Length: 302
Image 1: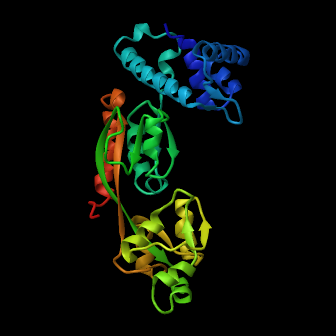
Image 2: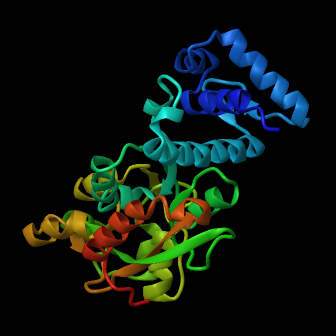
Image 3: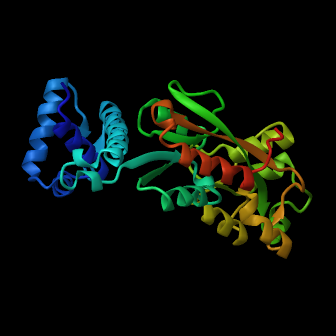
């Protein structure tokens, strides 16, 4: 028999980040939350919560949190049809859905999709950001119930929906191009020109260079972990970077940004993967995401 009071305590600590905030959410004392979590950890023989600022779930803890997410959806559905079963206050507790997405999708088309879903549902959304080549791992580890990913093959236990491709352009300011590529954009010049990189997982610049030139030299790099900072850094002449079409098209028209190699864009196909256990109940979320993606993304060409 599962101890759902303890499971709720684990989920609340992970969601709020502390035992004190979890206690306030559950209307119990912090010591009661601590005792419930400790007893469950001892019973399972494993640590479920990594104590820190904030507290986070271990891999085993993440699986329990996703279970409680599923239970919350089932309870919400049950209370809708049988409201007399709901304990006082229970039916009003919103279920939080955990989703992973790449930063450029969040900064372009994805927010409009989840906002449409949020307006018509009672779910709360917890959106985590990672590179599109790594969000599938969040699904495998049980850290999220759905993700936007570059992986076309379904993660075990998930349904997959093709979304289209996010189109990128290698962009820089005209002044930057004049300074660093006076004789044209070549592999040798690219090896000397500063590039903008999101983080250590960011391979878009290397992918573009291999796509256009067949090789990707090492570049001096500015690290800018922000989609908008990539555009602003390009405009300011800090370096060249891969920017989504929708964020730079007006700058192309005004001449404030140019493509390093005109017409040499890079399309990154994206897919929506969602846990099969929740897919039917979250059909509205999937519908919003697929609809907006089909409108905002392009058909993959690569």
